[in-house]
Length: 497
Ligand SMILES: *[C@@H]1O[C@H](CO)[C@@H](O)[C@H](O)[C@H]1NC(C)=O
Ligand SMILES: *[C@@H]1O[C@H](CO)[C@@H](O)[C@H](O)[C@H]1NC(C)=O
Ligand SMILES: *[C@@H]1O[C@H](CO)[C@@H](O)[C@H](O)[C@H]1NC(C)=O
Ligand SMILES: *[C@@H]1O[C@H](CO)[C@@H](O)[C@H](O)[C@H]1NC(C)=O
Ligand SMILES: *[C@@H]1O[C@H](CO)[C@@H](O)[C@H](O)[C@H]1NC(C)=O
Ligand SMILES: *[C@@H]1O[C@H](CO)[C@@H](O)[C@H](O)[C@H]1NC(C)=O
Ligand SMILES: *[C@@H]1O[C@H](CO)[C@@H](O)[C@H](O)[C@H]1NC(C)=O
Ligand SMILES: *[C@@H]1O[C@H](CO)[C@@H](O)[C@H](O)[C@H]1NC(C)=O
Ligand SMILES: *[C@@H]1O[C@H](CO)[C@@H](O)[C@H](O)[C@H]1NC(C)=O
Image 1 (cartoon, helix red, strand yellow):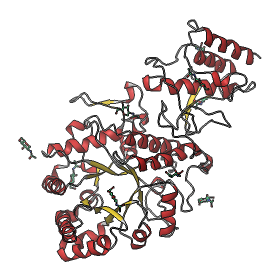
Image 2 (spheres, rainbow, N blue to C red):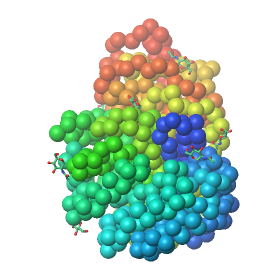
Image 3 (cartoon, helix red, strand yellow):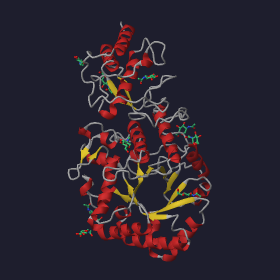
Image 4 (cartoon, rainbow, N blue to C red):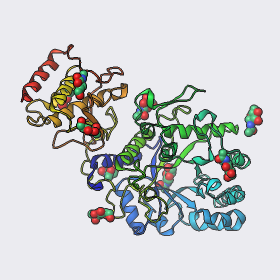
């Protein structure tokens, strides 16, 4: 059941990943490749999957030699990792650190484009006992890179958990857990001296689920369109339309609280599980698709965060495969976007992928406003009339002879009009409601040559008329233009029963 849904949205997600290729000057979107997978494909198979999907940046959780070999001459940029259980060795011995760099980095560049080393993962929160070796590990590794003359190509950092920032909201007052102030100061100084980045694992899924209702789902999924689902930082008046930006800014403000600025944040882990247990209702396909598609759109737009406008927040999606060997709740095993055989976890086909890039479209791509087929026919007709009339939706395509015309299917025709209205007005506050006869979905309703706005197969939308922040809560039918009036008459005739 899961796999038959939302092929277009997944295709779009992959298309966006591929766009990162052409976005050299801006932020990129890469992917994490976890290996707690019972039937992990061979390295060459993994690389084929990456190439088929035009993925340009990967983060490995180790420095597997078969992977590094398979990634050679692919142009894919690679972050290798020192797993937490090897940190002690590297942080206690300068020669072990040099040995690690020589065997796992120097031996593979330049054929394999290794550009960064992640030293441990969430060390201070997951393995506090190793805190004392963290800074020495960074320093020993840096010295080894310098000796190998790789220090300008390869940067060193360590992914930090949001748990290190006990109160991330509001972002302006965020601070790192003060227990670690001394180590964090040394760490930030290291990043500054070496021109490296702050690696942040930012997971709105956990922020949302642990918040237990404090934050609306729309805010976690980048879908906030009205002030009730946005958060304002009372100290800065910055409006946060999504939790991801708030997390990234919390990291910037936490660094600032230690008097350090100018270190870019790179998000090393973010995503959304597409399947969970019965007590994890928010881990589902719709949410995972919405989060990942909206995230990619947001990152590639290079619009930065409220505190750091224009900052390029490069991001690694979590993750390529479901890690079924992970312990814990079902959701922990289901963050992957593809199965080991390369088919996507939430869909079967990519057939729309080759079609046009929808970057110029208005409204949320991969999100559709459709008529609820359970709503009374009379209510759908009313909604249709409103959308094509006062709502100023472009209803050309549902006229007789046009691609979306269906004389006997009010749900399909109303869906087209609702969706067109929604995509034109969403940015200015338009809603998907139509007197409770409409609903949002990530399943693309397009068929044949009838392409809905927001589809990856859309032919590109025309300039939207901003109608102001007004939803179609009432259906005043007075001020119709002559042309729209014609549509209404045609439609009224069509659906006269
Ligand atoms: C990958 O990129 C190439 C060239 O840019 C393009 O022809 C191909 O369709 C893309 N494939 C996918 C799956 O996006
Ligand atoms: C490796 O990646 C860096 C950073 O994008 C790029 O400048 C460099 O050209 C790449 N090197 C190779 C050999 O592809
Ligand atoms: C800060 O970190 C210490 C050490 O891990 C931990 O005991 C403490 O609970 C943390 N404080 C907060 C507020 O999370
Ligand atoms: C940051 O700078 C301010 C002003 O110079 C100073 O009062 C404060 O103690 C500094 N904080 C830290 C953590 O160094
Ligand atoms: C893209 O960036 C522009 C400004 O840089 C901003 O106005 C717009 O809202 C952004 N769009 C998205 C989807 O983030
Ligand atoms: C790929 O694997 C998934 C999950 O095991 C399975 O449902 C699907 O049928 C497989 N697809 C192909 C083409 O083998
Ligand atoms: C669709 O309409 C039916 C009947 O009015 C209602 O029970 C149901 O909740 C609606 N579905 C959605 C997703 O709004
Ligand atoms: C309305 O949509 C049709 C395609 O269905 C398009 O050809 C036409 O340009 C659109 N008109 C406006 C005013 O956007
Ligand atoms: C909305 O629907 C209700 C019935 O569900 C109806 O009584 C009401 O008149 C409708 N409102 C408008 C503005 O059409």
